Image (cartoon, rainbow, N blue to C red; front, side, top):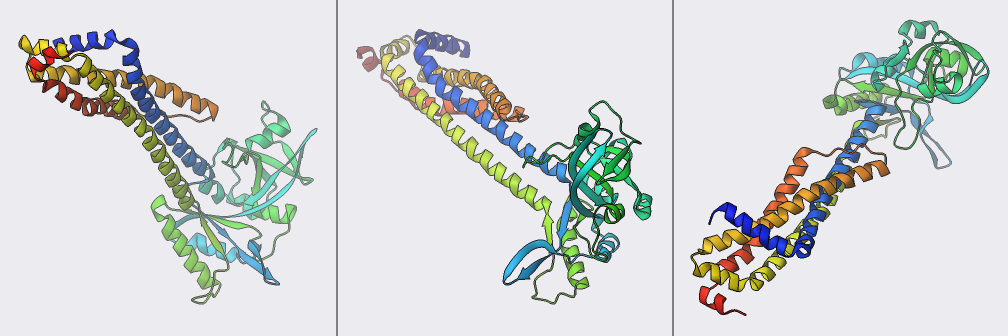
Length: 409
């Protein structure tokens, strides 16, 4: 009996009970669809985490000043200025693992341009800040070190701030904007970065040289930085080394003895991104495991229906053996039927999984990625489930005694 004959017999047997065959494959369809959809959603969530942290800046460390203590109450990091401009210069020049370092001073204020005004985040920094954040100019240019040295009244605006002041169709390069009633010349517009995971609009911002910020917007603390220090490591592999080097440098400069607490804090965004990515990976694995159980349930359904089929077709099996069919032919026939059920269910499950992933993506505004290898693995696994759970009924059919089978009623 050839494989083609086995396929023909299997097709006739499955079409003889269409509803039963459909219900049997339904478990496989749900299982494969769930695996594909869950893994696609999990991968998309992981990519979204990566994109969110990439928007903040790659290889970035944030150095925050110390904490105040009054009457036993701690004010939290950043409430006591302990980072000096000399500390910033030392980080920039003395540490081989740090490529960039920049101050980040921040305030909130009103901007005015012609007849429009808008309250936004005002930031004072240096050109290194944009290198750390990986933030380029969409139009115009970023301010330079010469602007910082001269405390020039120049500004670089985010896309949201531009649209609120000038609308989407006006080129504001070279125009004057008043920031806290001080006139500034717009020299550049930043590439849009979108929103943070917490809903913060990265583009609702204006940047200026930190020297200008101190003299025109908010008075500084002379030798201390009234903000944070942003540092960019030379690569992802050197972020932890850069963090250790900054820690050692600042402890030495601040004369902190061994065993004493730091008067600063370093936030490693790479570690935070890795932690979020690990949580997302574990969630994806959990969802995929739950979906895989659906495949096992579908496999049990195939075994159950194949056992019923063996019982119903006992006389048929006896007749086939009587006219020359070997136990191997009977085994092949029932294995083919089981594989056909699981394979058809797997193919239908691909369609269900793709539609399910697309629905979830639209529902939660995610860019869903369906990996081809996941589809192949899911369908291959469903076929293996058919073989595994169809093997016992097939062996039972192959081992029937022809005489007893012919007498079966």
